[in-house]
Amino acid sequence: MRYCWSMDGTSRIFRGIKRTSKIGGGRAKLLFSGLLKGSFIAPLEIRQLRVFRYQRKLMGQVSAEKNRLQKILEDGNIKLSAVVTDSFGVRARRIIEAMLGGETEVEELVYNEPQKLERLER
Image (cartoon, rainbow, N blue to C red; front, side, top):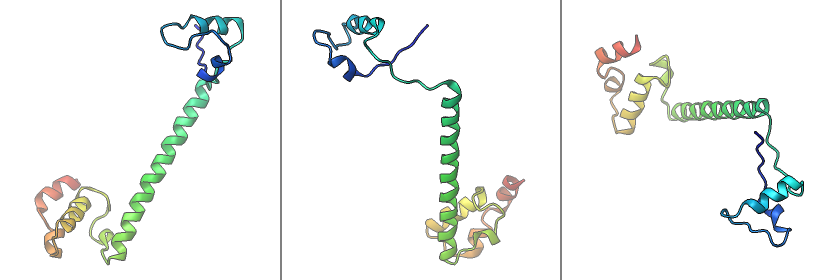
């Protein structure tokens, strides 16, 4: 089976051919007679490569945002990596959410619900 995508602008130059979706026979006649040029569809390998590049770009953006957040915290004299090993793990996120909620006591932030946190870290 052969697929062909064509732009609407290419069929406008031919007079008397309807462009509505109900009457597609005019386009089919143009295609089969060789007057209508099909759009380029990349091969599977190239499409997969494009998806891979896009995923790599997204991962880079996520890393950049994490680094930006860590730099903002360190500029505010909050050294989160001294308390937790993973700056974006469950415990670190809870600490950040508590700070955003208005918590100012260091002991409350670091040692909040220690039993639950120890189970989560294992």
